[in-house]
Image (cartoon, rainbow over all chains, first blue to last red; front, side):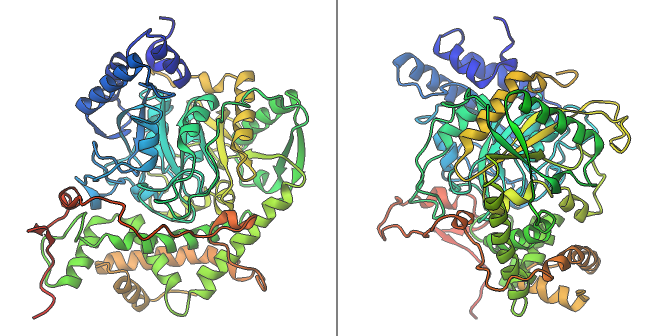
Length: 500
Length: 99
């Protein structure tokens, strides 16, 4: 065998399984062992028995000719997706020990009877997906495989770290304000958030329902295309915001020529706040795109900065409503000592939720409360439309938009611990596409070079930098095409952290 | 705008969160810190702009659909109650609310 299994892509593993070069059981054993030896803290739950049983069932389907498109290929699920066979915590003490009676739609579609993938385990995330560094997980932080003293990004930090550390070839993530794109950037992998409404939210524990969207994370754009093809498609009876847009084969146009492609460069993404090392890597990737025949077009997204308050009003408002279901009655933590029903609610919620979650519930409750709704929530939703309209103006001049994912490389664990607003500000480049519901992705663009003036990374180790690509509604295939062609011309996505 | 400790108490009550006094004070400082970046939003003229709830409604009509009002799920009480803190004879238990 040329490559160790854990160095193989989803496409290579799927081909090897179909050709019977190895069995799903052998593959599962290999990855379970990797997961058990993992030092990044990416996993919140493993269940080797279940994983091997799924692999045996996959082998049976491979033999009987009933195999799915990715039959037997392992993956991890962000712990925000409910699963019957593994506990689901959403990174919260509130759901410690919780067992879902059903699988999320995306878990079903990727698993047995769908694409046929085998679940290795559940991956760490910020509590209820609220965070940008995975530091808000109640079960401890995750280490960035490129530098263990740094965050992997968030909220899908476990997914990104496990893929970068070659513990799983692919994983699910969810993106509300950047939670697929930013950790993908920080860990040097590839991730895509589809158009809001294309992938079912059923069984994805809700944070901010008008923004939450699941998507795949993997090392290559091709692998993301393979997973996304299995994930998208209407779920009309179970997700009321699911769009009636058919599933699509996102691999079909991966190799399309980029000649004549107009890439919009928003000037607001390249201002003072952008670290020099990130800018250098992004500029390098943009230069590669021009070599491939693309033209760079200056554009403007004038309300980029406003997306921060708009998002941090809308998302907490929706969160305060969604998280009201955690009352210590039907599931989740219940306080031991209480005097009556109301004190049971209040104490159960105070004990079960972490501080960032409480802060967002409080903010959301306030902006929705009588007398403040118009000034905050409604005003934010109006500006949200203006931000979405800005994108439509921009797309008159360009086919895709490109820029940095985040203003700087992965920060040190604990660096923003007492300053939640610092985390919020770092989301500036991912929030606009989230608010507009547009597809967005991160593709490895290079590495931060800490000795460059203005980079402020203070790290001797190379830290990954992602290029963000934003497409118009339903243009996922185009983003994946651009990312794939970039990956044919560069090798950043193939590089491995030291010691992996 | 600046929230007082009374505001925090009122919001915590609405949100059904029991906050320790020190936690409430810390929360007040942090939320006020956040609202300093919200001010920029207030200056935006949004006269005549329709609020956007489903983002794809920016380009096309999106109707929130209703499914047929028919039973679609089988009775799965045991599995549905397996993670409940207190259950008896298939019922969720809560503290006494009616004397």
